[in-house]
Image (cartoon, rainbow, N blue to C red; front, side, top):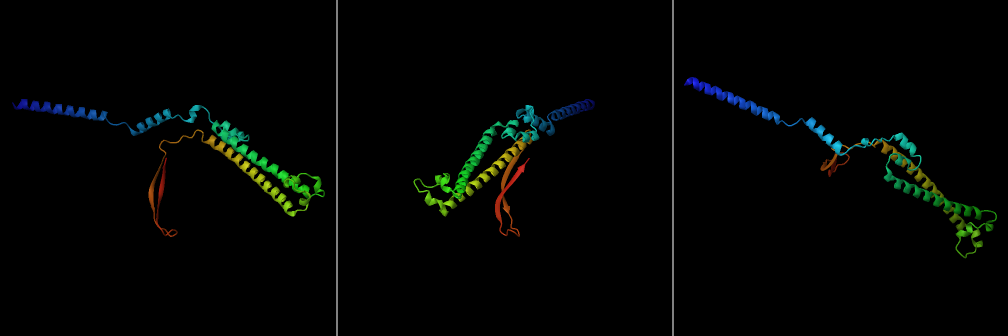
Length: 222
């Protein structure tokens, strides 16, 4: 009787050990995957869903982009950023109109001022176009106020023409820099983990600012 009881206990112990081993194997099979592999899989999914610009097979050169920018809009065409062409054309058209309009008025005022100051002002028509309609030109020949008006007009439009030229040169350089930056950042991919968060912040008093205050704290995570 005791021998059979011992055998039964041994059998039960063996069954218990077998069930424990099976349970351990089951739990080992349900262990979550390695986070490194999981993150790599996520990145692969993101790359497949959002392919980078490198996959297009075109990589612009920043030096060539600057050289093509010598021609207005050439750098944008080289970088294949065609939506910027209307902006480039509009900017250069406005600059050309400003320079030409101010320069034409400058020539009119400069010619009128030069002719009225000549030895025979009555022989010239340029300054007569500035007097009121029907007025006697002889009454304006020695009119110092009228002379000063022509001089101020000449200086005004010369200053505006020169300023328009400076602005045009600045815009020319700006579009050249834009083409360079576009070429450099053409294959730049923004990380999906890029986030910008903000929260209220308390500003304690300091020696320079004795009063405390409340502001907003910005945090950029990348």
